[in-house]
Image 1 (cartoon, rainbow, N blue to C red):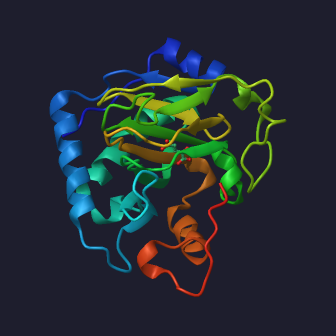
Image 2 (image 1 turned 60 degrees about the horizontal axis):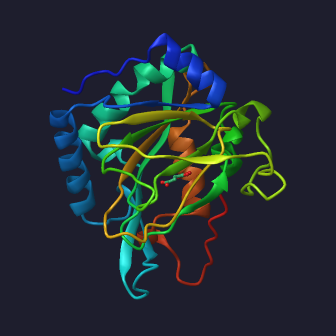
Image 3 (image 1 turned 180 degrees about the vertical axis):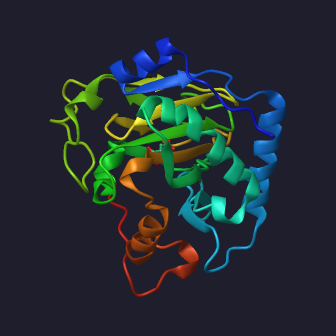
Length: 252
Ligand SMILES: O=C(O)CCC(=O)C(=O)O
């Protein structure tokens, strides 16, 4: 059984001031051993239509190499990740001020040669079609460093709200922003809101960087996980369900 992380009052204040907060060592070694095993299990499952969603990318180090970059829609197919996404609800509810409902979840693999993420606010990816506000919890599976592409956060700019939908941040948006590396160790967790600007660099090191992300909305606004993935299936399905004649564009 995983423990349920708790956010201290000072950390709640920090979250509201900065748009994000880091809880070092929220999960212990034994718990992270389990999460590591679960990650290996989900990675080893065959890619089948109608199951968890697997996405690939081409390595930036060796162009022919095919890398898994992301696995999404996991909890329905893995009891361990179901437990993890459940225990993260309580601390997220502390920040939301009410119960949390799971909206989406994924593991970003960022293997050696894996690409980074352009600066964005998560709600720019059309999330406000479903609910007004979201909090994402990041669980650090592998140590994330400057070298292997840890998250970089710009504190305080979440207060400006949503800048623009379906487009990442541009130079004008970022004029006043200072993106600072948020290196994390295995077992650290971080919470960030859907307006908190963030980015990350490609992983040109030799060390894998897997981070699990679970996103929640206020339960009073409804349950959207099924609707979100049904809509996303039409615009950006997992690789196994792609039509070779169609162009799929990752926008945010
Ligand atoms: O995995 C990362 O480095 C960043 C993830 C991210 O920003 C996202 O998935 O929206």
